[in-house]
Image (cartoon, rainbow, N blue to C red; front, side, top):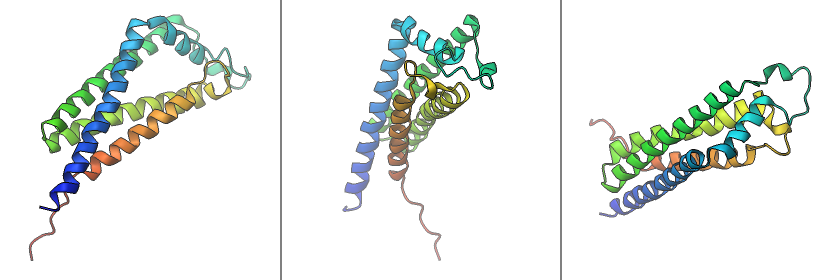
Length: 169
């Protein structure tokens, strides 16, 4: 009976932390849908690289087509929405104590968030499009926070996994 208490606490932690990221992603997607123009400008400026140092060796990377910029932004919103839905479903499964499916769905959702903020905003936005050079349109701190928080939640989700039993002798 003593072993069920720590596992129960880990499952509760996984439930609440996954639900927190799900809420965050749902609010981000909702905000981007209902206030489309605010972050649309962010994406446009990052992709156009118009607030960077304008180094000639880097500016060939800039995407100045409004159509491509807006397509990228819509793609980000779709990704955020799907990640939120997957995480909401994972949270619901955790609450129902369906730990195996909850862990799987939560892992998928958390990896989606980590890919968006890690590969999308930190690597592609931050390095490829030199977002780090911009004083006005730099989302690296926020992206790093969400990437790290999602990684911690992913670890907690995996910690709550039952340990494999050693093979019988």
